[in-house]
Length: 128
Image 1 (cartoon, rainbow, N blue to C red):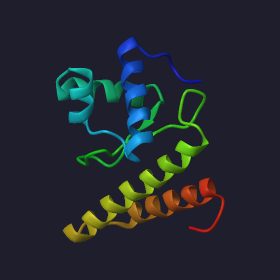
Image 2: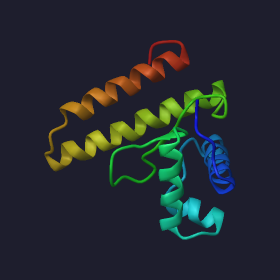
Image 3: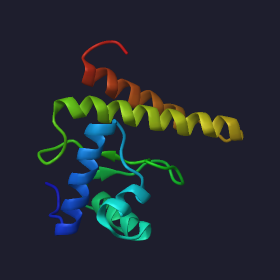
């Protein structure tokens, strides 16, 4: 069971879900801050609270839009699950390719990309 949210966290979570439904990706800290009329640093703190309470999953460090929405009773519906899975795959693949370009070790990241692709395949109900 997910922990309860503060009123501001609820507002941010709803903004993230709505933004994702409209744009197919999650908003950046800057976009969250602008929408909530709060500094980007406060948007980051609010995201950390949503992560701690199990409403979103963190992504790779130092990447924009690197988190994903957790499915659940308060989370996205079936249509959004496909968008979330696709967004998760794209984010992990981009991070993987950036690491390849920088010459970093990518073994673990490759595994994450494969898992994200498998989840996307399950959500669309076919071969991706």
